Image 1 (cartoon, rainbow, N blue to C red):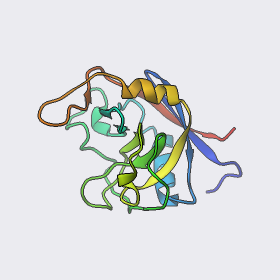
Image 2 (image 1 turned 135 degrees about the vertical axis):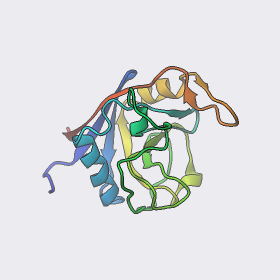
Image 3 (image 1 turned 180 degrees about the horizontal axis):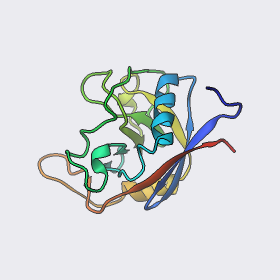
Image 4 (image 1 turned 60 degrees about the vertical axis):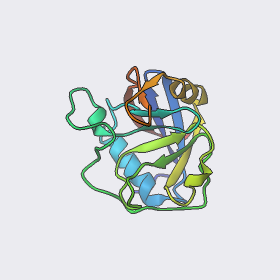
Length: 170
């Protein structure tokens, strides 16, 4: 179902709102999957569970919902989508699908680049960019983190996502 006006996502967080413009020309199936999950309320009540300042903030895992079982960062919608690698570069503000080692393992988890991550180009599916809320991205990227082992990327305080709303572009 196509709409006459392009759609955007408004990610409402505890730190403010971020607005994403999609790239349906670059990653049509990925954009449709994200919009479908958002419209179904899949992302409501999740959190950004991985924050690496200068790199990215990651969210979209159902295991981050209050009372959910399972390790944050390991959950998904119960299916995986095929990668849509494209020439869009992973620079600050770009939203892309998170995945495991297998290229076609993305489901619901996504990340927003806080810095340039061009080494991810053509290896992860970039599908949109931040058009409002860069200040919110900055606040979240600067949340104190903790962790055991090598990567200390777990936010010390929960960075909740109340809703992801799909709206007609202004």
